[in-house]
Amino acid sequence: MTKSWALFKQLSWPRFVLMNWVVAFELLMLVISGLWQAIMGDFHAYTPFFTLCGFMMIPGVVSLVMLAVQNERTVMTETYRLIPISDWKLYLLNLGASLANQIYLWLVQGILFGITLLIGYNSLGKVFNGVPEGLSQLNSEVNLVQLGLTAVVVGIMALLLIWSTISLVHFVTNAASSFLPRFRQGVVNVIIYIGVMLIALRLVSALIGGLSFLSSQAINGGVIDNMWVGVAVMAIVILAEGALNVWILSKWVEPKLD
Image 1: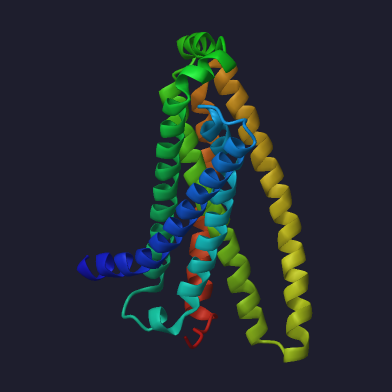
Image 2 (image 1 turned 30 degrees about the vertical axis):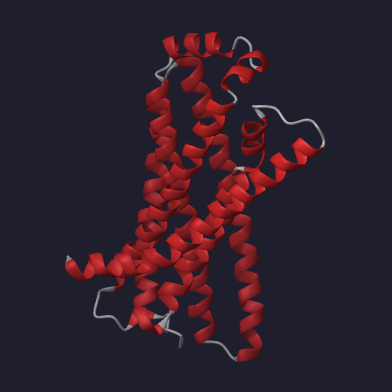
């Protein structure tokens, strides 16, 4: 347990630094946008809130990609592969470190959202006239807290699904390259990537459509339990991909020099 915790902290630290750089960039954008709005004479108390809402998706996507890169570098690096620890434990700790830092970024963004909301609360009341009454009516039909927590769980499962799929593609192409002449490796990798991308696009489209349907059902009919069907499906896929990833990693993927 001690070795696992020490490795988890070692894996988490560089990712924690990266997430703080993402937060710093987000804060810089808020400051620059606020200053520009002030220079143009169009700064209001609600300006930081709308600015944050306008581009807060960007840090989420950037962090997802950065953490995916960290995931792949870790399991392919000789330094970590030579540690006396099982491949499945390394795989889980690697994903756990990325997930912990992604949640950390979400919490920071939630805090920023709350701060900017409080700053412009009085002005926003005029802009969104009637919203509190609408939320109150919605809350009487649907438990908003339960809906929010369910959405967080769905988000976490979607992250794990994306990372496990990226790892699967990476490991398969790496393993296939080991058995082929160099001039054929590029062709096979391209074919695999195109095939996986097409499958992934279909799966993502179906996933988004399914989650949108379940969300609308939850809001309109109060059937939040239906959203857990999507969670269960993602969990099954994540477990299957995880088992396949660990098997390929231990049998066919050779570590690379640092």
